[in-house]
Image (tube, rainbow, N blue to C red; front, side):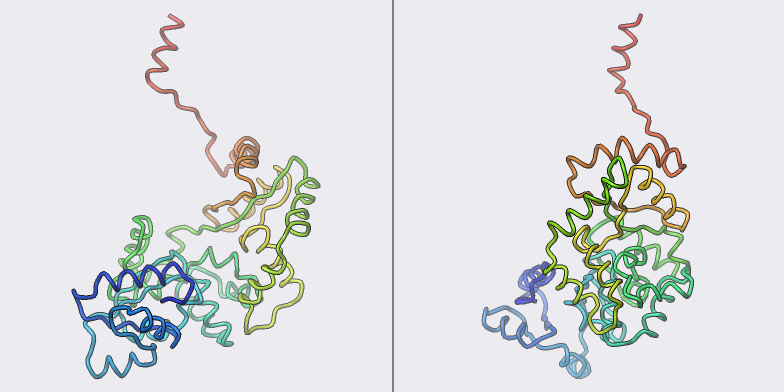
Amino acid sequence: MPPVRSGIADYTRDLVAALTGAAEIDVFVASTDEVDTAHETGAPARYATAHDFPWRHHRAPYDLTIFQMGNSWCHDFMWPYLFRYPGLVVLHDGHLHHARAWSLLRRGRSDDYRAELAFNHPELPREAAEAALAGLGGTLYYFWPMLRSVVTSARAVAVHSEALADEIAAIRRTPGAKSGEAGVYGSGHLICRPTRKEAEEYYHYIVYDMGDWEAAEHAAAIRTKGRSTPLATLQRLKERLISGLGTYPVVGSYDDAAEAFKWMSDAGLNGMAIGLVNYIKDFPALRDEVLPRMARLGLREPHKAKSHPAMAQQQLGATA
């Protein structure tokens, strides 16, 4: 809740205001600052820190506990209550791996992280957790959303999109199934040019000549807080934060890019959301150079233009 700077905080504040009067609501937050802000602004409902929740719930059990969950450190305080007091989980993100990993690893709970990753994604090899423990989890987290533990323990789950609702329903219907059956998808950014040299020079330009290293230092400090990270790994993390917000970088020639996607596909990745530095300038190369190469590698079906029926009739008429 405010003053926490989060879209979910603003949304929850407005939701509480709208529901007050229709139900008795107690709001439990992480800090006394949030309680004080609520009192100062005359917010409806009763506010208290989360430490007061257990005894209040024991004294007068609540009909429903609602968790507003997102993939952010802001929700760190909710995890101990989430499984002990199951309720309605409102998922504002389709991935919770970043938040859960940060919560566990900053406290040195490496074994708990390994166990939870194995429970959420039983299809993964046991060694998968070691990449995150080595400080390389930023991009990998997008492959493994870690939703199963939250979804299967909740009394109900609410989401914002039909696609995510279908995924949640599948998890709840088959709690023992491997999540890999639903597909493994990642997030990356593409920097490609006709030659590898050109791509690497442009990458160096946006990272080292134009990059905001102060912001990268701050973001990297948050992601690695509470654990030791090798200098080379930390440097690579900062570069990725600058070039593509920490997602996986695909840098090289058009051939290099297609081969990189082939390598990831062979490793088990089903698809990837790709960001571009300049969509207007860079998309033609993706469309005209990279995608055809991916089709030749068997990663995509060749694009076949479909003519409009009226246009087809005109063409037939012109050749009659």
